[in-house]
Image (tube, rainbow, N blue to C red; front, side, top):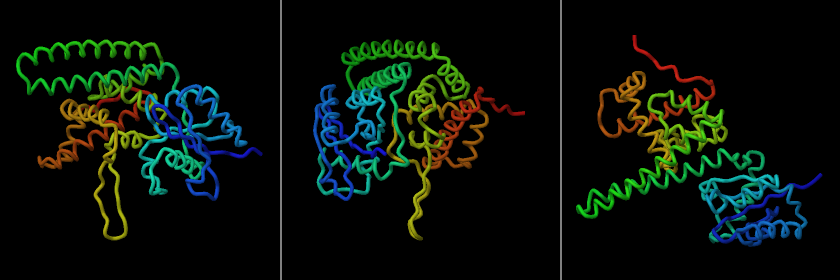
Length: 329
């Protein structure tokens, strides 16, 4: 029977620090190497594993999501058919084993240790298909331009007329770029039956338009990356979580602070639209406010509406039909 190995990899722009889990050893005792973050380095990593009598095909590799820097290694491992998982940075940051020192070698060892301890529950990753990958790239590009546009709009409010004219030209150019990208996204969705089907389901919900529908499809990888609506709501930072301990700690349920802020802002806009145009959600919002209009009550009520929208999104996709709008008698 082949032995299972666990390899933690800390990814940076130029280098990969890899560590092999070693039983009955502290983090500093884990076998370590450093290779370049390119194809030559990936093959060097496999040679290093062979030198230590480690079968690369029986390894579980783990690394943090680092965006562009980890894409190359992810594609390499996926093409080889090796098992690997992409971990949220917060998971490793709050991992209970925290040495006093902080460096890339120990970070790689922490990931390897995490893989061993949670080997039965760790979720393996896979590179999305080409269509989803293209959609994800366009989604990221659109997000980049939208953030730039917001910066220019904010600056326009505090500058003189001459600079405002120049900013208007930049904003107009970004508007064209955003429109062009959105057209490409629509084209990709229309050509894929599964994507188009789910998009139409989502678009049938009042408040959920093009932006939030695409956000949901890309982030959830067409509703395959998240098991439940609550998982996705937690990712967006709209699912309340409790915190209790003994008889003294009794925190009221509240959403997590660490979340996708851009996607959360988009679902917030959807909630504002929904409470105006959706009769059922309008009544739900008013019931949550209970006649109060202070900021805290409004915030909690609006967050409940956001959570409702996420539940509806997952419901229509799971049940495979458009949303049946409530009609008052």
